Image (cartoon, rainbow, N blue to C red; front, side, top):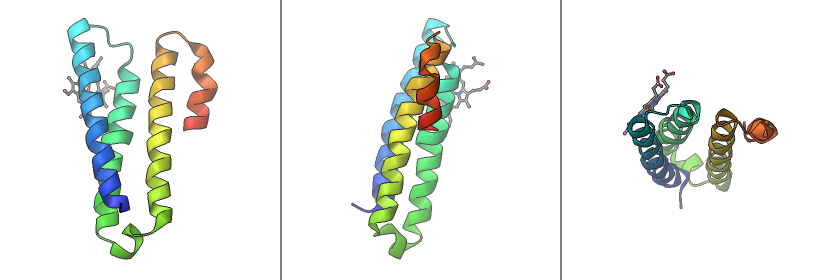
Length: 103
Ligand code: HEM
């Protein structure tokens, strides 16, 4: 799989989860995990979609393994950061080092 198609696919998964999180916050009227929602949407949806466009415009780079590794690392970092930021804002301060490593 190319880096751009991986980016676009992961971006769609992230926006669906991010929207579900937003709808959940709105319905419960509990916005405490808002920073996690914002990071998930901006790192997972917006940034990955931009990577997809960038790589698609550079076919040589798009086919490289290094670009796929970059996208995969971004995916892992975004998942870990979202979980850690949500945990911190729910009162689990012990998640702080995870947020640091994920970032
Ligand atoms: C179904 C879609 C979405 C729903 C229902 C939703 C809902 C929400 C809610 C309830 C808040 C908390 C607002 C507050 O407490 O002040 C919020 C904040 C935020 N959302 Fe979403 N959201 C959605 C999609 C998105 C998307 C696609 C993005 C980014 C591309 C995004 C970015 C943000 C940001 C950056 C904040 C923080 C705003 C601030 O600092 O006041 N959201 N959203």
